[in-house]
Image (cartoon, rainbow, N blue to C red):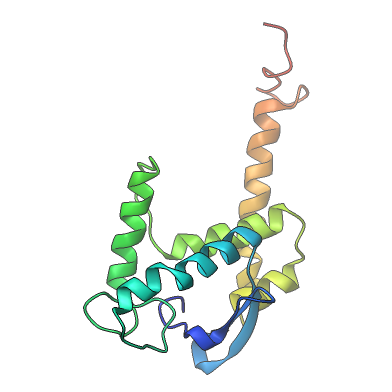
Length: 158
């Protein structure tokens, strides 16, 4: 979905993107402040340099042509960026969707909103993220709550 975005799919003034998913279904996804600022900077600077006076309807373009950035090139960019950020674990583009959904739920978004933003036809597909969230909460509880079986070390005097 990301590599197929066209520049006209973005509203950088109001901060949202129109995403076309499976079955040509479209949905509106808001951009956070940091993402919006990064995309605005990219469009004003790096995108123009990549295009070298050519035009392209695509938001993210390949350097050799003015066509859409390929999935493989996006994967390479993601891996390189993760490595530069000190992330040692293997990372793939789909993990960005998982992180997006998990962060939304951890910060109070309702399940239906997350379903709409991810483009899931079934709520049960989105509910997978609530299990991940519960498992993470359980792990934190076990590690830090004074009444858990093995936790509370954080609260004990050293």
